[in-house]
Structure formats: C-alpha cells, structure tokens
Length: 178
Image (cartoon, rainbow, N blue to C red; front, side):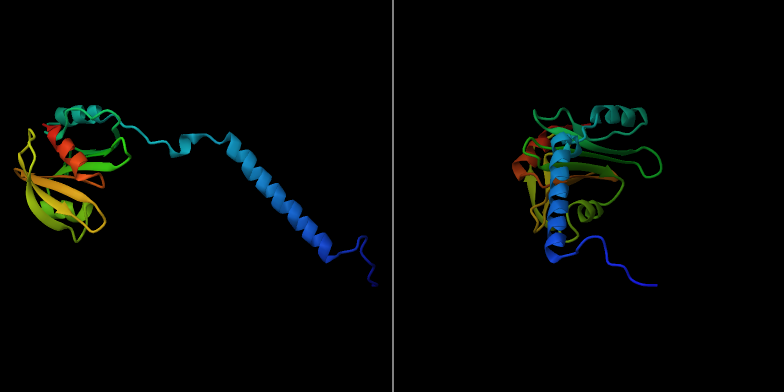
C-alpha cells in the first residue's frame, strides 16, 4: 500500500489559527450564555418560619423563636423534629447578609457550642440582655469571629450563634419569646 499525500498542507500557522478560532468561539458562547442567565441561581431561599413554629406548638413543643424579624432580615432555614430527638433550629440573614442561628434541643450547651460555634470556642463572661427567655446569657466566641449566647431551659439547651456582629445577636436575643 502506498501512502498518498494529504489533500491540504498542515502547518504550525494553520494549527494556531484553528486554536484561536476555537478559543474565540468558546468565549463568545460563554458571553452569550451569561446574557440570558437569570440571577435566581444566587438568590436566597426564604422560608416561612412562623408556620414551623405553629407546627411545633401543635406537636406539643415549646420552641424559642423571635416575635418578629427586624426589617430586612430573612429566615433562610428551619430545622424541626418533633419526635425521637426533638430539636428546633432557625437560620436568619441580617440586612447586611450576616448569619444568625438558633438551636434548641435536649443536649448540653457544650455540645451545641462545639457543633455550631467552634470545637475550641472560648467561654466569655455572662452577658446581661433582657429577653422573655432569660436576662443572663453565657457568651462564647472563636478565633474566626463567630459568637454565641447560651442558656439552659430545663433539660434543653438554647444557643443563639452566628457571624453577625454582637450587637445584632443581642438585638435578636431581645426579640425571643416562647
């Protein structure tokens, strides 16, 4: 069998040109797709936390929750389990996009702090923040800027924690009720 020459001449310049055309095509496609892509991919998912409070009360649980959220704050997650190991959790974003969470369950404060603030969180001084739950809160912090406020409610532990400034956390504590 004899080898026949190809129908076109292959050169370094030709391969470079083909590569440039391919890269331009990919860039044009990405730009075109970006024009028609919605902003919904990064949108915060809002949850109806009041409905979860009603469900908890209907199941015989007395959960600690805010009376209302300040203007611009958004509830983004709820964790409610009424059977087995009852627990309640609510995640909120402040108007600045900082996180505040609340956890209430039959566990020790140390367990909740280790899980939601930091394994090596430092206990601080007690804080005096007036709320319907208690006026004295144990404080916690870590090296990453997270803070927590805890108290015990009978057999349950309550932890309010997050990356929000301490002033926002304290304002949230003042809104808590049962």
